[in-house]
Length: 289
Image 1 (cartoon, rainbow, N blue to C red):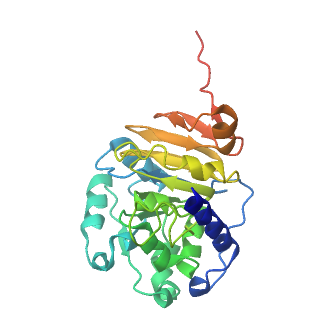
Image 2: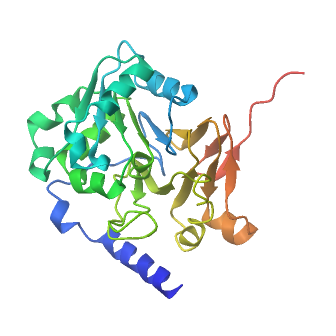
Image 3: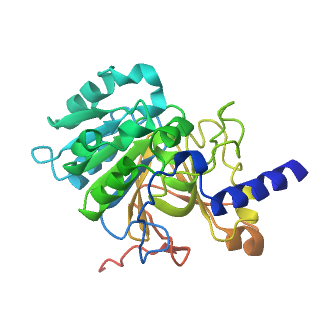
């Protein structure tokens, strides 16, 4: 337990100290919301999405429809070999019917800060982060002009989506961000891209028996919300409201719920909604009898 709390201290220090190697610009993330984006939407997917229709249909809808959508697919999590691999592009085109899909893969921080590189993001209605290792995304884009361009997609009312590593990177705290492996919960990379503020996100939740991994961290992190998503399941985040889409469950980890009610997490299924600001389940509208 001592090593765990030492890791928490390191995280808090890192959060308060600029990342010296990766801060060419200051990212404008100002918002009145507590967790979610003030404009636009997030689609955060727990991995292994396959051809889950409800998730992909929501992505197409939020991106403006298959005829108008302009999608950028970020392949950094897959490693350097993904720079020229069109498989993710072809799969997304096939599943969604969207024709305007562009691969984005930075080989260096200067490239991620160049006008030419960010041009596709500046016209995008949607961004999709593929799975792999989330720390690679941080190394490629954290605090770059491309990072700011991602936020600008949200400001224009677009959608930022991602599965597995592409889900976790959307949080402000980078869970399982260690370069040694995903079993290290708090590692050498602790800063995510922060589209979902004050949050830590886990994925492959039930498939990999990770339901309790976030509990101790959220116990000592009252400002953070923890979100765990099972495979083929997603949340749509608009402002401070989330709604579950997909086949399985989403777990919500709240400091007060854990300590005061002795409930480790709240499970949500498809269609259920949750208020991130007030940390409560949103009751479904009453239907007339």
